[in-house]
Image 1 (cartoon, rainbow over the protein chains, first blue to last red):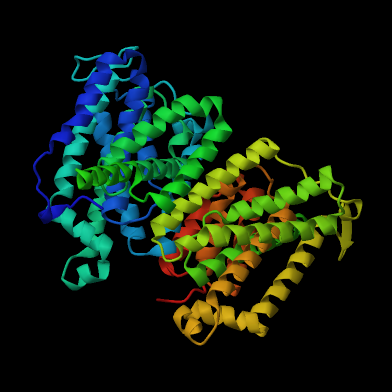
Image 2 (cartoon, rainbow over the protein chains, first blue to last red):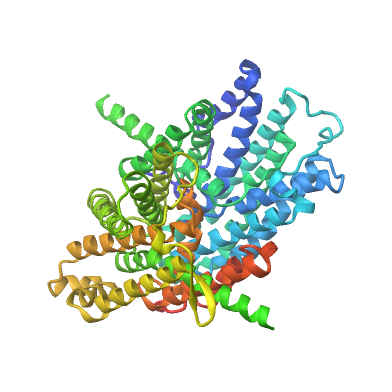
Length: 324
Length: 291
């Protein structure tokens, strides 16, 4: 069961919607040793939110969303390392604008197609971006990655410290703004028309909705958010590697989103948290079992738990309520 | 002039060999996707499995090369039947997203399983002596194995085309690709047809992976790395068609070889760009059904 959106839903904040922010702030004070991982999780939540918009709400299946994440990451990195633009806000703005433009240009192309052709185009575009970053050695550092990224203090006041405190709060603040925008969008008439297109695009066309333009708009916005998330990752790591581009990060992000639950906003919160923490523990010690476990989990989720972890929680709550 | 001619011949020759391999692997994907509308991203895992069957047979059990090739087809086809009945069949008619995720899950599992069983290094192919060395044709030297590859794949492709165009099974497959409901209602057992076609397609992928193990290295990341190429062959060629993917595979084989030979810095760039261009021009592929 999906949460109602658009006109059918009450747009007011539910009590549980404060929970992620309380947890995030609590983590800042309670777990000071894990702030680097925390910042990584926050950026991936923003990235997953952007994917949820197009996959979960608009029903566009993509295998290449990392193209925008990666281009945002490289824009921020190149701005700092090659052009000396170190202001974090400027970097985010440039990364968002660049990735958004890329989204507009590629979206205009891929949204004209459907099914396999669309899937293939998203994959090919992401592969193309990876190829460009790999070959443009002098700008991107190629396979060695781009180091020498420095970030100026935010507003000239808050320096990015060694312990990652500033980076964590910076990512949290950016996520908060991104989440607010996504939430506004999902609960708006525009959001309702997106789910309409997802569920039956022919009928939406028939009642006069400009399907192509709506999809293009949300695709562009999603690319912009992904670009900002990529730039945040660059700022938190002060490094960009090729692993932000291509099929594998795109697939990994899909895994996170599926794990949390698609098309329900907070699935994009739960998925990256569980996935990245598990990865932090397991991937280094048991890489084979880790990969195998991810695959098995995907298969099981698709076969038995299509709502992801949040779907399982929902079902359990519904059962409790029936018993009570 | 002489040098240019000889490099042209060499590129064409190696490109055709690579294209043949790509086609033998991908044709099953084209037919099963056209037939069942199932987006099977894990097809490359079957090709990798075939490759591992061959390399293991040759290096560990000293099984003769022809028998090892046959085994790579038979074992992969047999395993794929189990997968199809137990797993894939549950997702016929499911949404594209679910099929994509499910098969990505299978890729992850196959990559991990291959790494556990065979390690991360690529598995070398121990070719028999009669397939090593050079052969002289029309006054030029060609590697024997590539010549064998082209001839053998050509034979498989001819058999396959004959099977699809001239036999009852082929007629049933074509009918089901065109209109599954109609085929079902005139008494074709489409369920069984799916299973058999899936097995043949996967078996061919295994055989292709085994044949091409000398060109496309067999290593655990194979299903991820080669996926783009298989999907390009199928989408550019056109779903459900036999001829389209053949032409697409040859184009890719030759283009890829030519790029590596003359403009290595352009890498795969040109192929991706061309794919995007072709799919924009004809979204259903060069020979796909237009909708």
